[in-house]
Image 1 (cartoon, helix red, strand yellow):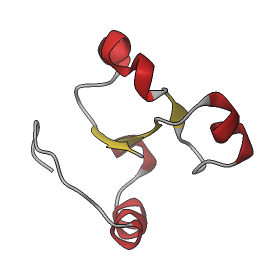
Image 2 (tube, one colour; image 1 turned 180 degrees about the horizontal axis):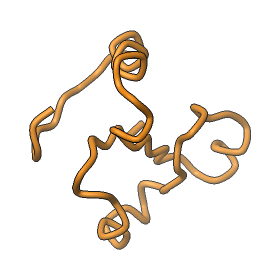
Image 3 (cartoon, one colour; image 1 turned 135 degrees about the vertical axis):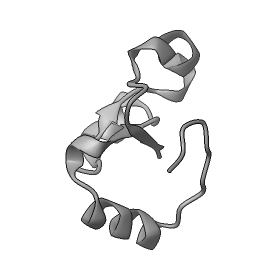
Length: 69
C-alpha cells in the first residue's frame, strides 16, 4: 500500500494480506476495549482503544502499513 492510502479490507483479504507479508511489514491495531481484546484478538495485534487513538497517533510507526480493526 502507498503511504497515506486508506483501504477497506474484508476478513478474507486481511488473511491473504497477512499470508503474503512478513509480520514486520505491518502493524495490527485492535481498537476495541481492553475486556474485548482480552477475550479474543488476532495474534500479534496491539491494543489501542479507539477513544485513545487521537492522543496516541505518535506511537504508530510511519514506515509500516497499519491495519485497524
